[in-house]
Length: 259
Image 1 (cartoon, rainbow, N blue to C red):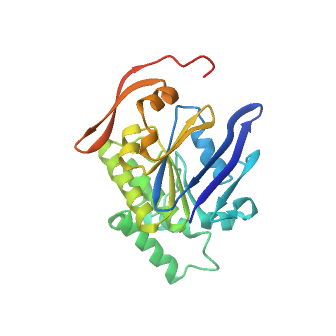
Image 2: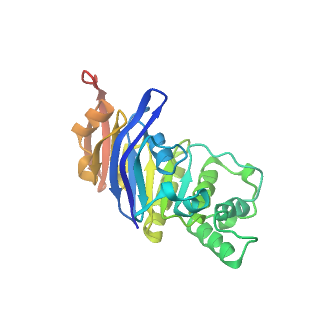
Image 3: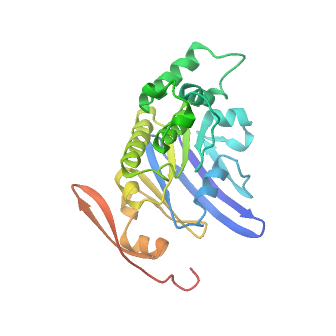
């Protein structure tokens, strides 16, 4: 199982957003996409799953060019959680079952129900199965959205700022669940986030975007004070607290000319 992105490019009109994006991601690893606002992070996820049609480039899942897949087949290969999820009034169980749409024939079968129950156990949602989604907290809704994406049984899971608008307790629980599901299901997970500390603690691979291009890609060794300065225009110290890497912001720095 793998995700290969080759020469991906996208523009909104005359504004070039992504330029020659290329990387290869392994299974059972959480990859964090980092960069300032406007660097192309969300657009990258949308071009990977063809919500936006790229101007150039190829996206391969297990060696298959997704441009050749219909929407139903693509939904079987990729799960996607956008920044904001708008749901209808339904039970949590039914909301997660919506993730099975790409697999369902004329009717639900025992396999569909078993997969939904298994995903809900993984995300710790069993106790909320009969609750209506409009009665849930922000953190609970995020978990439902993640569970719905996992119910697709995707080979690739794309998450656009899943920690956004969550308090610190829910941030910790949600990202822990994402990381555990990535390992247990052996899928390729790609998460856009602004939280450097959460990324460093839980991420296995990293993509640093700058001005719509890959500035650096690799393991934790690429997250250095110099890289943070170049990408975020921020002076930081990176140290360890209780055995975990921590990024401490010191001051902003002026971007280099032409950056």
